[in-house]
Image 1: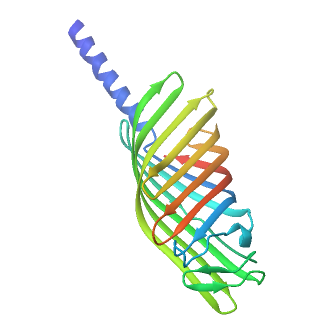
Image 2: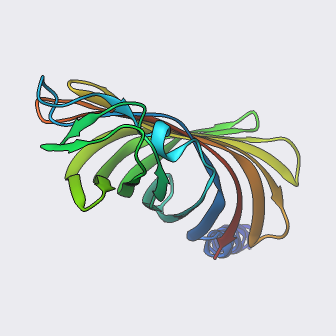
Image 3: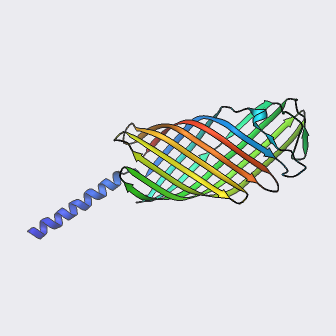
Length: 250
């Protein structure tokens, strides 16, 4: 009889644990929207004595412009997670250059109205591993495969020049969450790489409120900084974003 009760208790414990695990959300889908400001955006193409280095901020100013991002996470099993990030960035503005500029083989006149557009779309797939979960902290580490889709275009009185680039960038991923209490959490996320001809940093800081078991809202700040210095092009930019977010867990 004692053996029977022990077996029954073990079976009940296993079933309870399985049910609890089944109730845990496997997927999260988060949308960030906000306003982005351009701190700096220095450009030269070609990156030699045939091109001139100038600031896109001279034409476009500092913003703000609307921004949006989608973050999706799939908890595969236990501490293993897959992430997908869709982060487009685009603006188009009209202004003037302080002086004449040579860009992508074309000449643009200073003091004359000129149109500039900037695209920096980031499409990412990543893996993360939860390596710490105690003392109100949860921490992840992993890697990200990033596809960079970028373009800079200038247009003035029928003259047009464009430099576009699509490339692959591997990034280190770090993230953490601190549980303030049952309703409030603070979290950070980082995708970044430095070395070689360039660097890329994407850092987010956010304060979240648990509306329910399925819904979470938040507000915070995101930094985008980086660029490349190659034989073909020089471009380093810094963007600051104030954003709000909504997350659905299912």
